Image (cartoon, rainbow, N blue to C red; front, side, top):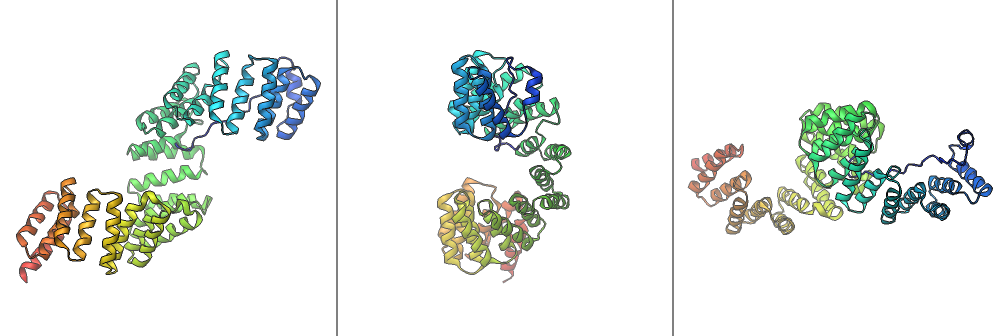
Length: 435
């Protein structure tokens, strides 16, 4: 289970009750949920005034997902025994099944108040986290760990919560504690993603490799390993790992996107576009249309690139600024200067950062508006003095205006930055001098 996807665990507890002999209980309790319900109903009919029978009925209904019936059964048990901890826990699980976490918190806290030893601190932690009460949830997990230092589920839960809060170092500590306590139950996969979030890709790779030992067919684990290998520049190994994942789930959009990223990294842009297109066709909501657009652009398929960027604008508003920016460069390659400038302006409105100023300046250059272009480049460099692309474009603008000395200043700035663009600008400077 990766961070951000963690859910509350519903543990259907055994129907332990002193009123029923253990041997009889073992003999009569069955695994089939419907038969469990039939058995529980028989117990209620036989002894309607016993709380344990109502408990059994409540857990049977929980097992079948009939949570409203479960609530009624647990309430009946509480009428018979108001301080029955298991009934309070059981009704909490039912409330969770009905997506009513606030009510679940009330019941879980009541159970803990009645008997801390039987209270479910782990589920309380997950539920408080679900309602946005992060610090109190962390306290519940810490109490669960204090009471049972060998509880990897509580450690994992604490890790998920910290990851979602962006507290990655603390999350990693929690996951490490879990895997050291019980490697089989500790979440190596989530530890891997946490290390990735911290930029510790070699440690992430090690964690994903350990996770694969316990769950060799888990696609999320395999993909995590593949992404780490890609981040480490081990592209061939990454492709091989993604291929393993693809054999398990041929239509997994994360796998298909991952293959697209690696193929792009090694320069196979048309192949990358194929993977991105397939991912989008399988799951439009998970399609990476911006990366698809750049893949088409890098392959020289600019019309298709524009189409991909348009899809990004329409489907993924959060990526609209980057999509408009990418579209602008594709339109520029198609000779549609005015349209490119419109795209750059839209990107700028959404995210007026240094990169957007630089792109806007380039758009103005395309249509011959040099004063506006140079002002945009200067603004970009005010925000980011080490923006080599803005230095390069400003140098181009000075060359277009036949001002070689000013262009030379930008060349020297690129040299100081040790930018590879310095060599390109030098060639253009020398060519102009020779004219």
